[in-house]
Length: 599
Image (cartoon, rainbow, N blue to C red):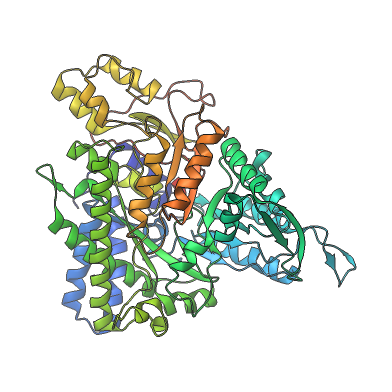
């Protein structure tokens, strides 16, 4: 059987995590067989809708070719579990946490089931009574949401997802919760809540109070009474400072999220998946998949027709996964089928810009990003409508925003999401999500005990074509990541091959905003900052993100955690410099937040 053209790093990742193994731990399938297994399981759903065997076989082949050619890949659980006994295909889940011991530990149990099957979980802990509040049943004092988050964190530690990857969580607390100050400072002690990304759900009212030097009322969620009033500016400053120090918390602009909630008649959104790009209702899940934009370039131009075909096929694929899925909980199956949310996004955006010769931090790049995502959303919606006309709209369509806007049919409550695409971009050999290059060469912590050094293929190609390539230069670049100070490299090359740390922070936020403009769900984008970035830099980023109508924002100052996903140069943890891998099909890209490789 013909095998796909994969990088050395992609093969390593597939062997470690994705390819099926027998009871002895021996690999029993090839990458091509993996793609065939997934295509077969997902295409088989068509039979449920009266499609002939011949048409199912044709669709299977189209799905297979889409993945084989690395033009589109679904989220990790689909690749791991489709066509297997586990059969759980979703990456993103949100679970409710009720204010009672049974409710809390039921959520812990449900989280464990989801992690075991390969999914990641998000929680709002905003309904839990604050620390020191009364517990009538025992006449004792409540320990508060942060102490209970530790239970979730430790449980995550001991559950390895599907035996293949660690669990990941998003913990969210509403800005008005009495314990919000402690929550904001929770990551100050490194090693605490290591399996959580945390974000504060901030409201328009809070933002306005910060602007007007007003106060923030803290409300006990049990009694609904105001228990304290603090200066809003002080809380804002603390969020900014902690984000600068530790990378946490991020901010979720919860009012903006709910302004775009497609099913407000079903419920209010309070939480997201672990990387923040998928707002979901309690007990809801979503299947994600990403188009590799690096494969959508022909003769130095975007191949719009190929992109259109890929979008249509990808929407069909993702909608089928909802029916093919084996859900870990009946409540999740019920709500997921009722809303049929999918999240089609992109990866390889930085690679596309390199092929077009456009610097990431330029008006030209913003224009390309906006044009591409508008196209993905428009064509994705058209595909969803077409499927709805054949198979019916999502059951909660009546009363939804889609019906209010005058749509006659829509298969999926949401269609588009921009995810971080950590390990699936390794498999595809492209840059992660819509991130700029993290470095021209860097070390990636992919899994426990596995470190991969990657050199950008487009840079090596340019270096050879322009005559400045040498092994010595590649090694030198691998120690610096950026090439901005290399005198031996032409200025025009340096201008195009900018890295995440070369780019002024506002370009990161502006890029997130243009993609968010045409994304139903949200956009995962890390604003990477150099180690010497100031607290004022972080504050400016947060303000800009809010003003540009992003749904959330995350910053990461290089080196602010002792462990991170991507490194430039030699790691302290590994005294021997990794061998440089030839960049025949290598790439560089990514976002160094703790859980990007999880997606």
